[in-house]
Length: 242
Image: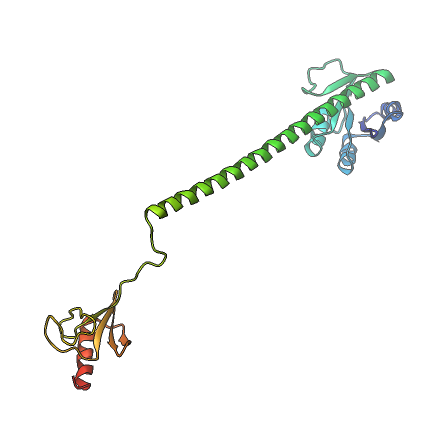
């Protein structure tokens, strides 16, 4: 296991030097003479634990720990204080009272690190479990989507068998109309069966809402109103001698 990195913070040089010396035999120790320097050190590198004095002029120990946890939430914390009033100690933060022996200090640090490692392991297991659940949920969703698509295809196929629809619906054939009475003309008619007048080479063709003049197998003029088509076709037939 890699050696744990500790950040020790105290505004008293003698306490800072002694505490760092006590811990230096087992851990990699970085000493900070105040909270602002400690924040700079914490931003520059990762620490497993911050051991901070409670009472400091620049910033109280709990405030410092909260600031560091803001950008390094996995860093463990331990306060040290000679104050007998422990009512101001935030919940969840352990404290060692000054003065302490080397054995007491090591025991407190080891206890906090062990709790931190256990918490980290628990969080890792929870993340792994959550990831597994998410992956399982995603697989279930994919299976449900596949089943749904197959059900939709099967239903559509069943409906198609019961109600067959041609791929290309037959379009209504264009109508050929008499130029005199606009009656529909049967194919190859020589006379209009309604008005009895002869059918000339120019007849009216109506395809849906479109009206034009038809002659010799093709539409010659289109985009006309019905009345204009009748008049124009009559004129063309007259010119043609019909």
